[in-house]
Length: 347
Ligand SMILES: Cc1cc2nc3c(=O)[nH]c(=O)nc-3n(C[C@H](O)[C@H](O)[C@H](O)COP(=O)(O)OP(=O)(O)OC[C@H]3O[C@@H](n4cnc5c(N)ncnc54)[C@H](O)[C@@H]3O)c2cc1C
Ligand code: FES
Image (cartoon, rainbow, N blue to C red; front, top):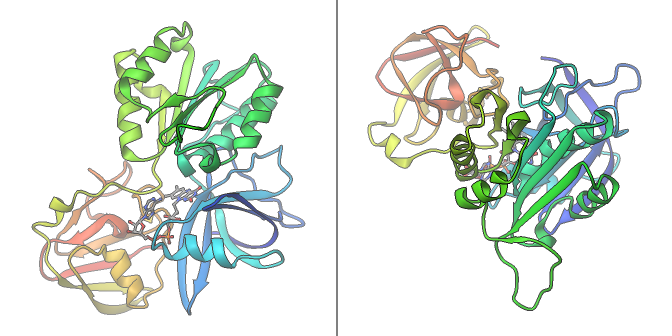
């Protein structure tokens, strides 16, 4: 995996709990990325290395600098550290861009791009919409965006500017969940994005057959939009989703116990304790083993290992992604399910 060291050239607070960090492209070999992809930051905090992916909010070919936009997660180690401590002229270690939640200009795509987001889920959508509006000439873009109120709406001003710049091609439906009664707002929809509202809005659309959908937000939003699109007979292949975090049902841990697991990493075997509820990846990282990873949602495959002995249970994802062998496992979504587990790391 290629890594780069980039200089922080700008910092902008977007909302009371969201910050954008602008990074300078390397002088010679520019980092190439597609709208919708993410950049993985490698951050050292109190002598421990943490790795976290953040979708590009910048748009390739349009924005001079690379940008990631980060929302503080209560109790979150890296998001709070980045929000509180990163400053201009710092250097950041990053991995090469990854992800297949992309709007690819080189591929033919339907004429109407519909983007569905909530909160920080706007980041990859922002990159996609800037590219779609700036470079495609005739494609229409509609954004359905749910937030508490305008103050907590990331990119509020930029989005209004884009809507004014492209009045015939770009429309925003703002959904607000907490608007004080004495606040006057021009136009918004009250409450969350729900199935009935989506069906009502889209039923009057006469180009649904020519639409492609990108959804980025919590699991509930994804399910809601998927259900509504299925009622409206939008073809499954035209719906893309991005996960920032996997949804874990606590009941899935009922048959998991704290166990010892043997990890063989770079030829060195180490016995680690994996406590109930902790993934094998996180247990190994906590015990100082330097493993490769990024997404922790079972998509980047960087945490792939070979299950030499024993059984693991997948939690957070239903099945292993295509292309993996039966004895492969993804440490970020694997939990001990037998004694004598032995895993050989691959990257
Ligand atoms: C492909 C991808 C793209 C991403 N892009 C962005 C982005 O553009 N902007 C952004 O702000 N974040 C993004 N994330 C999430 C980001 O990578 C981190 O997971 C997030 O910042 C939390 O990290 P942390 O170290 O602060 O929290 P941790 O210390 O890892 O976790 C603390 C607690 O927060 C929970 N948690 C972790 N992530 C989330 C989350 N996203 N929402 C709610 N609870 C969470 C954990 O379950 C845990 O209980 C993305 C994630 C993925 C997989
Ligand atoms: S860290 Fe990405 S698949 Fe496990």
